[in-house]
Length: 472
Image (cartoon, rainbow, N blue to C red):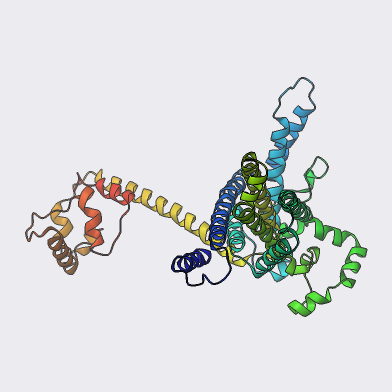
């Protein structure tokens, strides 16, 4: 919205000619802002679509990751088929990778749900909690931060533009075209290096699963004391526990920059990241800067240098540049999504828990549990009233409203005189008929009628009341 607001102001200035005395190519300037806004919106939309598939993958892993015992049994079956000479199934490798992904997801979930330092943690989570909801909320939070321009990204963008204008812009068309072709490859190279770094950092938490270590993890009750004794530890903590030398080195190599900047020494987990706790936002700002520079590259290419390249070479350069931009757009978005996926995990694990997203996960679980409880309650109500309707004795209409003296005989509690008067008044206001024949049609009028009383009904409630329409 800020960029669109700036774009509108520039168009107004150009239209009224308020600053025509300034030696500025306003056509290039307006076209550049428009391409930048359009490119950034399209890139963000592309990231959202790819992130949706990442979330769907987490939901699938949550559904399939039930227990270590079942996954281990499936893994053994596939391994036996793999070494079977008579078996020629082409999808064995794919099935094995799917089980390994589920196994790693379940390990990550257990490390998160059971506190690594239970003495200093207030609670552990139940196994029924949906861990994919927590990861989804964290990924959405990271996307929001990614879409907002940070001051680091603006500085890197300005430095890149100044470097281009000073050292490259005045070169020949051939040299300019060479540099325009190099920039995308540099962006993809840096993005790929960031992807390798985030994935390598993820492997410090969850080690690769194979036949040698798949039996190290056993099923436990998440909210029991035995869970703290048999859960194991992440790879980075396990190395410190087993090797005293690494623990001594960790205590010696305390970052004084971190102590002075954050007023505390880094945690064991933060010590793994470059620049400590500051490395997490730095990593996000770096990938954001790479993507913004890609958009700026598109602006410079198509608003300033495109006509010169087309005049010198041919119209085939038009197809070449657009095709290269599309390929770069797809690859850069794909790598950025993978980086954000691993970054979300390493920035949201148990030792760096996002409490805001934890509360959202718990509230989501309570909401769905409440819906299930409400549905069970409605079903029992239907069974109860069906039993009352099908009873041998008949319920007379006079008993419902006119049995004033014995209020306990009416289980619906409609024998209070003031309630009867209030209901009759509201019926009159709705039907405009002040007589005993005024009725409310259940299917068509009950929902809007009860809205006048401050009550809202769902379609399920209407079906529930329509069940008794013929009986009463």
